[in-house]
Each structure stands twice: as structure tokens, then as C-alpha cells.
Image (cartoon, rainbow, N blue to C red):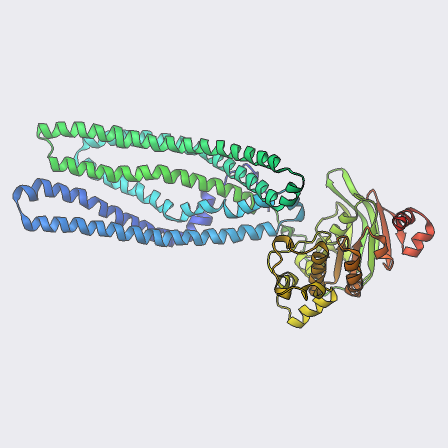
Length: 583
């Protein structure tokens, strides 16, 4: 699917076919309710005209009771239809919003890793939670009120023409003028609403980062710096909001001035003149003014609803940007479905660049047999994590091929491969919840016996046994209530429970103290048995038993061999190892 230009607006036709048309039955029912309510609003003015011009003058008490009863009935119908309309359409609108949020979240999770490298998590949260909110004005009461109000206004205009054509002419001109002003204003508002959504996402993203990094902020005494950054973002947002509010207020005040002001005043003056001339009765003028309110009310309402619908379109523009971004699974060349794999991974002349013409991996070739342990070592920034990311399909080669059991990974359906992949990172992510929840994350259907086996294999029980609630201890956001070593052991237990065929350990023991490392080094060895494992380690003492060690320098394999072979060569690996040994 081709990606749309980011500045391209979603069309009215697209919104109608994808959002409004599927809800046509509900919206039609809502329109019927609005028209019924509008019909009921016409009754009081006409009944009042009859009351003033006929009933009161004739002194007919029975007709008085019937007329008042009819007015009361009309008011009841208005109240019931308004309640039903709001209850049904508002609930359905919230249901659609919930559905759209799920769709956007699903889409975002399907996007490649490099998408998230350039996005703030808080901004993406805003995309999911805020941008779709305006849809309630398309399938809620807003849209049908806009249509119903327009139909009502046209219908009542015909009644007014029949009552007094000259007075009606005084209404039509201000309405046309207001329509021109509103259309111009809404054209200006849409890009401003879109800009407001973007700024809101940026401010939300920065605020999320601030809260997540509060320990770093306090550690460096940088509170005032963050406050200034947030103030600047909020001020930019305020300026855009001020502009949209000014435009919206201009539309509303124009409606009030032209319709409630100019038109009403003219009608009162000319209508009074007609009464004095005897060409119009007081009841007719009273009814005319009452019907004028029926025309003006939806037009005034339309000015507010119009700005809300314009805001909804701006939110959908931003949502559409996300929905049209190519997903990982959109690659039509990925047709191969993997069964249970053995785990042989082969790199053949693989190159990769984060930015064009700036390769960070250059012509890398090696073979990792099924069940083997491949260690990646080298200086910081040499390309170790990039190779691991390529093996995990988080990144795609610019040139060359990576195969799994002889099948080109670029042709494999990602879900079938990643279901057999396990990853333990240097700063592994833990979710808010209990220790049990985090270990069960990859396989929530696991039995208690399988859970306990993973807990013991990673020596998690060594510290959970000391907790009052054991595995049901709540660990806080990102596991802040645990030490670095405890968090890492928990992450390893999670990987053990997942039982992957391909395992990637990225500095998995870097956060462990000597005691913790000794606890889990043996369990890691057990975890790696029978699994193709890629180990990135700065502690070279932890990879002595690796089947092969790749020394990566400047994106290339500088040396390759076992620990003993590389020590014997007295090359780059020998330098790194002896340097660490001296330290």
C-alpha cells in the first residue's frame, strides 16, 4: 500500500464511505428523531398564533385547554426525542471511538522498529487516544444535527414564506452571508486543528519522557530546564488553540449578529409596521418570531457543529497518516510460513545502513549452526547490536541475504519467525504489574509447573522468597521496585518460559553484580542448550564457551574463532580480553 503524502487531507468521500456509510441505519434513525423533534418545535409557535388570534379573542375555554395540551405534548416529544437521540448516537459514537483506537493501536504495533526510533511514545499515545475523539461528531449527534438542522431550516423557511414573504426575505440574506463566512472560516480551521493535534502530541510526548526520566532529571538538578521546555511547548500549543478559538468565536458571533441581531431586529421593526398597517396580526408576528427561532437555532448550532466536524477531519487526517504507513506485514514478498525451525542462521555478504550511503554493517558473512552460540564482541558502536537486530528481523539488510534453515528471512512471514525468537536486552522492559505477570508475558497460558521451572532456572526465587507476596509482588512501572540484577533475572526467566529456538542476549549480564551473575550464569548455559544463540557481551569472561566469537570493528568482522583460537592469534580479541583481565 502506497504511503500518502503527510499533508494530504482525507477526503469527505473517504470519510463518508468508511465511517458514516457503515453506520447509515443508526444515523438515519437519528435523523428521523431530529426531524420529529424539529416538527415538535414548530407546533408551539403556530399554536400560540392560534391562541392569540382566535382562542383568546373568542373566549373558547375548551379550545384553550386543547391548545395548551398540544403545546405540552410537543414539549414532551422534544424532550423524549432529545434523550433518545443523545443516548443512542452518543453511545454508538463512543463505541466507534473505542474500535478506532484499537485499530490505530494495532496498526502502530505492526509498524517496523525504525518507525519507533523516530517517534516519541507520548506522541503515539496522543495519536491513539486523542486524534480519533472527533469521530463522535461524525457518527454521534453532531452530524445528524447538522443534516437535520439544515432540513428543518429549509422546511421552516417555506412556512415563513407562506406566512409573509417579505419578512422571510430579511432572513435569507443574512443566512447566505453567514454561510459564506462559515465556509471560509472552516477552510482555515482544518489545518490549524491538524497543527494543534501535532503540537499536542509533541507536548504529551515530552511530558511522558520527563515523567519516565524523573530520576535522571532530579539526579542532575534539571527540573527548571524541563519546566522551561514544557512551558515553551505549552505556549506554542496555546497560540494555536487561541487562533482556532478566535476563528470559532468569529463564526459564532457572526451568526449571532446576522441572525439573532440583524434579522430579528429587522423583523420586529417591519412586523410592527405591518401590524399597524393591518396587513399582519399580532399572532402571526408572534408565530413568525417563534419560527424564526426554529430556523436560527439550528443555524447557530451548525456553526459550533461545523467547527467540531472540521476538528474531527483534522484528527482523521493525522490518523490516516498512521493507517497509511506501511506495516511490516505489508511486504508482499513475505510469503514463506515457517514451521518448527532447527535454527541455522547464515549471513551472506550483508550490509546495512541507518542512513543512505553510510553503512554501519559492511559485507558481513558468517554461519551460526543450529544450537550453536555465537558471541559478538568489539568496541562500542562497532555494529554488534545491529547484527543482532538483523538476526531478529528488527532490521532489514540493504544488501546481501540472511537465511534461517536455508530460507531467506526477507521472504518469511515475521509472525512465524518471531514466535520462535527470544530476546533478553541490556535494559529489558518490564510492565507495571506483578512478577508473575511479567514472567508469564510471552506465554500467559503456561502452567504453574512451567512457571516455577522458569523461576528456579533463572534464580528468581532467590529474591522472591524473601518478599511477603512472592511472585505476586507488584514491581511498579518498568520494575522500579527491583534492583538491576533482579530485573535482569526476571527478564531471563521470561525468556526461559518462552522456550525460543533463536535466542538473542544483548548484554544480558551487564546489570548483574558478581553474586547475581554467578546465580544465573549456569541457568543461561542451560537456557542456551539446543538453541541458536547470539550473545553480545562486554564481559568477555562470560563467552569463553561460545562456539564462535566474532570480533566486530567498524561494521566488519575483524576476527573469527573460538576463545582459545583468538587468544592464540594475539590480535584484537586478545587485546580486549587481556585488558579486561588486568582491570
